[in-house]
Image (tube, rainbow, N blue to C red; front, side, top):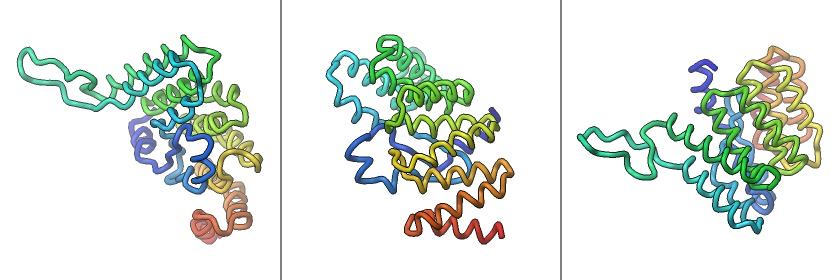
Length: 240
């Protein structure tokens, strides 16, 4: 993956809280999807813990929590004084932290392959892969989570991640298929206006103007009060 594309992914405004699955989703549906640029960014953050609180396996939760702490560790430049060591709980580079987080989440996945904690750990792992530029690995991991998670919030969000990873590989047709399938799930967990906006953006990047126009029009027609409606109207006017 090119450095420019990695930069674009990191700077993208799209962020999804991993698994504030029940009450938080219901209360903040309009804020779940924040779409900017042309590529989807699935932010893998501490929200996953909310999901795990419902589980009774303390050992699984503890192992997952340890992996999250690694993922969220601070980046502190390596000490330059002779004999000094890296501050405990920190990493000298983002690459070092990512590699440690990959190992930590893989440990959870290996220990609990059939447990919900293992599923959420793989979701986090996929997000780290994507941030590292390992888009193919991210797409594979997201696809597995999406398959196992079904229509749940984690499963649906994983499909968004899968689309992002496919876009990062310029596999636009495959990404469009994933997003089109999501856009047909009217009773799904994700806000449909946000899904349609992302579909429209990816279609634009793929040069599929008619499909992009159709998706923007759905936002305007079906969600006239949406926060995305104004942008969708502007895009339609620009497209003619």
